[in-house]
Length: 390
Ligand SMILES: Cc1ncc(COP(=O)(O)O)c(C=O)c1O
Image 1 (spheres, rainbow, N blue to C red):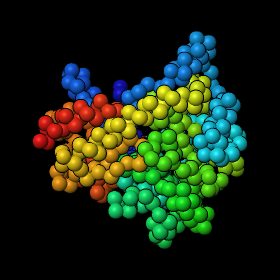
Image 2: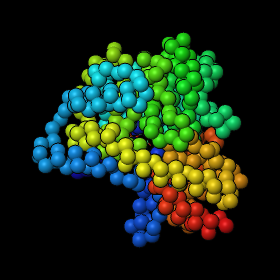
Image 3: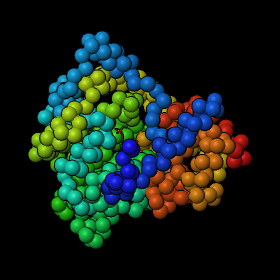
Image 4: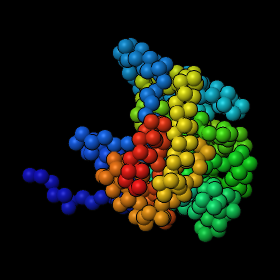
């Protein structure tokens, strides 16, 4: 006899977690593709380029070796050392390899950081619009996301005043920032980042900096919170600049006193990040030439879209300083971005993400276009959208 489904209930934590709309659009696009219809993918933040050749070669060599073991929970020593060297090379910041934690994508980094830093019920400030999984991971862990409302007028960057205002309600336990940001692509300059760090220290808040889009900037390089705040928790990943989304590999740099608590959590929650991906990722930092060529393609796609979108009525776009997204205010076309994106996929074959993923308030008249597919995909999207909207 089948068990009675009413005999168990879904946890309140699970019930609170909203769907990730970009992934729902991806699933709808896959259905269309299975029918043989071509889709231009601008919904997910995923490079269309493969991982660099040296990364693939390192993985193939490891596979040929045959044995794919668990590793130390904090990651293999050569990779932790290489990440520490990357911090010195990219930012001029000295980091002891012992402070580096290798994770299963930055997604696992958030879980580990939040569990290590916050007790149930703690309030954590996050950007809104912002990456939707922040809210969902916090909620799944019984933590309370506290949105900092950002807008195009303030350049979509959080300020100490916003943090202080959020703290004035009920005390916060932490602040999570990202620069370059998703979905707007805007960046905090070194002074703005340092001021937020100082505010956190003054208010006794944990300061978590998501630096996953570092390397993907179209003007000045991105600043790291490490440069101004040795106590900041840095979260990063091989997914974006390094074109390794499906390898599920990322890293954190954490203050010394967090290393052991995070190690205990990682040992029990995941055991270790995938060995194959760790070995492969070691080769990623030296693939600069290949990765810069991929970035040049993003830059061409970005320029093309910034040039063409206004003529399509999608011109209210914040010009991204980094990452690979444009966040467009489409108030003149719709006040239902989910329905608009559904029709855009069905009728024009262009997949985009409704702004509601990032912002439950103003997201109904925004959408996010990812140009991670490069110039050719952007040109095809413009051609299709011109036919559809024109
Ligand atoms: C801002 C931000 N942080 C984190 C992630 C998660 O990346 P991953 O788990 O692949 O490292 C994403 C993915 O799109 C993102 O946009």
